[in-house]
Image 1 (cartoon, helix red, strand yellow):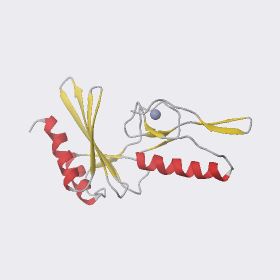
Image 2 (image 1 turned 180 degrees about the vertical axis):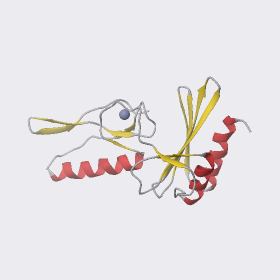
Image 3 (image 1 turned 30 degrees about the vertical axis):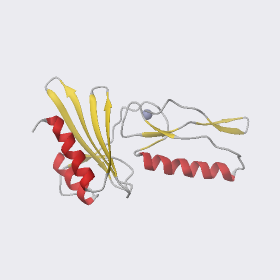
Image 4 (image 1 turned 120 degrees about the horizontal axis):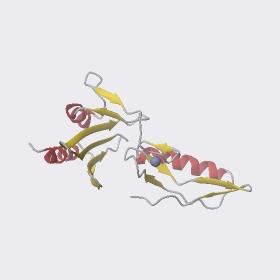
Length: 165
Ligand SMILES: [Zn+2]
């Protein structure tokens, strides 16, 4: 089995277990991402290295605040159960290539929830309109940012941030 087909197999497993699948290509990295209605998310990445493709597998449960890296078998188990199997090898992802220095959430859904909370706080303060959105970090696919919040002379506005990808 080639490593390219590993991503395809993971994508098929996601579809078979009710995940919404997206395929992403980002420079030298190919990615398959699954989002589940429970709020859980899963990702498999293949990056070109000198010795061939390097495969990585990540998952985040619906109630988790951060990603966990695991082996392929662990991700396959997760895709079926939507829960991280504690008896299989797994490592909490603690580092990030993100250098934005902005507030972030690990998934789009959690970022949108954060946005809704900020929005309702803003509306309570009497603002008429709030322009805001979330976007995936340019440096780390497992991070989502909100457009920046700025405050000038007692007036608060949402500022346009880097374009979404
Ligand atoms: Zn970032």
